[in-house]
Image (cartoon, rainbow, N blue to C red; front, top):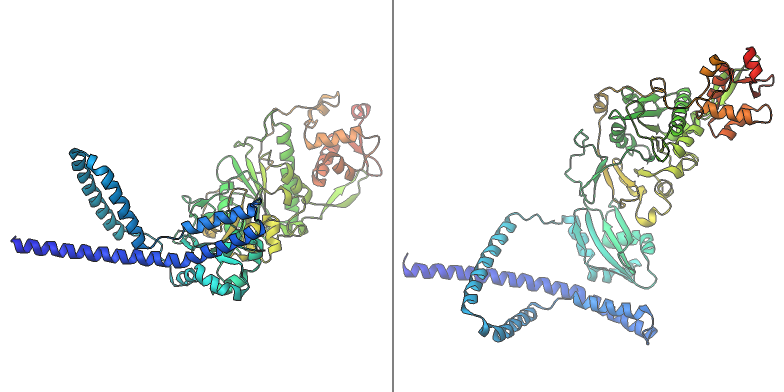
Length: 594
């Protein structure tokens, strides 16, 4: 290569470097200029607020003035210097440092410093090239670009007063994987709750579409609110089809993390018709029915969802079946609690006595249809009479005491109102609430708590179907895209033997109460801590004959459990009925004579 060619090549590289430097200088200067234009009004506003605070508190004895001074200082720090001033300061600082320190630097240090600088420059060039080729930064779409422009402090300040939002001012908006996040400063009488009530004015100022989900909540410090526009989701692009490898409930739309719901909790699943309750519950039902130590019981009077699971779950689809299965569950619960070892808080599930998850599908229908179920009984005088039995007392008892016995209640309803869709005794026992779209804020408060709206749990604004809020005391009010589990997938699941009291072995450790001297009668005596023993004890301790309906109040058992216990005790001869239908304990001489 000739000398002229080398010189020409050097000039080309120099010209390219000069253009690159000038281009970056111009971009950085424009960036700083725009930031100064946006943030200098904030400094002026902060200074005016400081002047007001000084007029109110000239002595500086209240936090008002000190907070205003801190806000002025913070606003000034956020205003960048012009690029020429920044470069001048940098050059001046470097010149002063060089004049003072460079003469004292040894030659060896000069040499290694030059090598280090060359390596750093080379690494920076390579990093810039790689970053340019693999730039994964978020790029706003057309809608987001328009919203970001209208959220700029200058635009907001010009139009806020026209929309009734005078006294509010936005900070610098940020585009995230879940949408646009922007801090809003609140002056005067503004609070996060008041700004939330003015949501329609905010939407009009931004020109946002009516279907865009908007959240307004308290900021990280007083006097600020946080505005979130859900223009995108962190779950976008994820495969939400359920598979055995993806066994979570769904995906968090803000963080992109999988959301799981553990077994062993009392659960409420609510949502209006078509919101996707059945689909959202299927991954949870699979977990509750999978494994040797888990068993699933479904109460479904609609006979739709329960039919899909009848090959691996106990399904009750008629009012009489519901009463019977609840009686079995309550008896099982009481027996487990009776033999629970001292010092142990919860039952340990085994293959013989597994964890039982009781799912009530469409609770409002169960409350109506399974409340008064007619049963024919035979009295002591041989006459047949009809009595009404209800499943609700047993379900309420399971909700209150079942967790210690590893019998957990899951309540599902599309009418989440206390007394109509959720019994008053069950609602306070719920540990985890899964709420899909509901019709009114009042329904959202019933499911998610009275403080739901104030803390951003706005289930009435969720899209339909397949989006839920999960409140377990740990999660934030971030929507969850639930996984889709097809009906054919449920039907194809392996068969499991449904749970039943007839297949559950008796507990060998339960003590036996000997009430009579006769050996044959003693062999049929009830377990001392079972439901029958509690009924027998109540009859024996009564001053005289006792009515059967009074036993439910005295023992705390449901009417169905009392009825079964009375039937068992009368058949074994431990109690007898008087002519008027009351119950009395059998005396020793009567038993011996029998």
